[in-house]
Image (cartoon, rainbow, N blue to C red; front, side, top):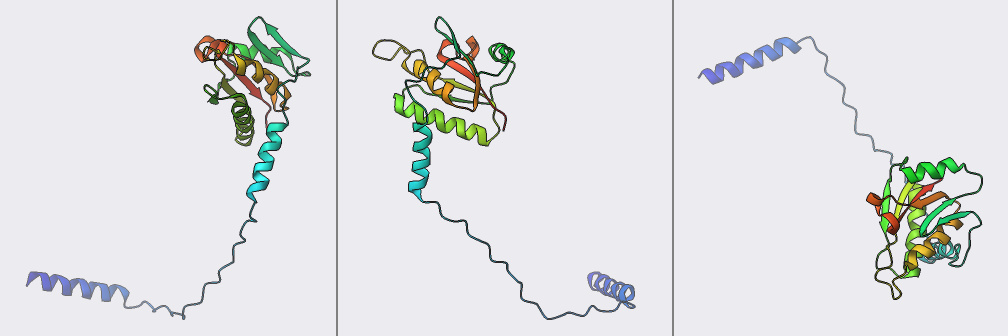
Length: 184
């Protein structure tokens, strides 16, 4: 019984509280006007493949940069027009490596395509400092670093590359390079 009396009291309190209120006029539901969304134009797969191939073909395996600096097996490069201080800072780890790829086990053509695509993706995402692990060549036929030697040519041809330097020991040493890319 106590429950029913409490319910009645609450109902009476509610009625007392809203007795001077004017009910809202409810209008009939309007149809929602949906704005048709434009579908993106389809991009043919052949176009995408052609674009990727053009990027890969834009760099040569036989290009010799005019401004690379080599000190024995160490690789260094600074694009003409940039201060040598950029290279010094890169070698000392001034920029933090934001993204890395590893080319171990890849053949030259695979590695080339992977490097080109990686640089494109990094530029899209405003990534400036990258590491490319090329290996030391221990598993190659002549025990020579094939990808290391090709990588220096590929990177020097990419306008996005300001400089590159052999990684410090804890970043891969002679088996990797640190690359500084242009901003935006």
